Length: 233
Image (cartoon, rainbow, N blue to C red):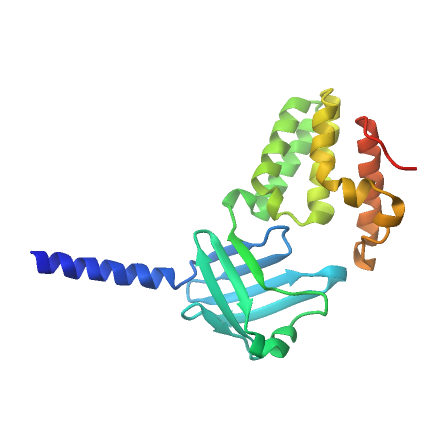
């Protein structure tokens, strides 16, 4: 009986070790939403990232024993911890790893298991629900809906325009609720990029982001001032 238990325990440990050395199938997103890793059940992966000025990376490979080699010869290692997968290219194959990437894009970093509620289609659904509530002047319900979305998924939203727009929509909703302190609070992470001196904000945007960036400067400055904040001349 003891021998059988030992065999079962050994098999269980071996299974756990194999699981620890694999990446569960699914989608993994970086904080800030600049990168997405999609892993299939057979280990095939697609890695896409967005860098400054519209530069991007696009890689395909198959993960085996927490390692992968792309068609270009880029060697990649993976580390898994709970819901996080860390991706690191081998410095010895740096040229091959840079090949599929624009000069301002990269892919190394931490990727987190995508929460079902933060999938694009469900985020859009919540944004649409907020818009309907806001237009119906149900500001309390609208604020609760958008605040919950920001708390759940904000860390994985791309900063411009997604996160910035959500924060501005929520800020204006708080203003309608006569809560200007909450309005300024939700806008505070945008203050440096969108409210400070024009000479700073104008240099913060690459040509690709210039249109969205300057539009968000105007919107954020207006909302910041509306809620009682000071805006530089």
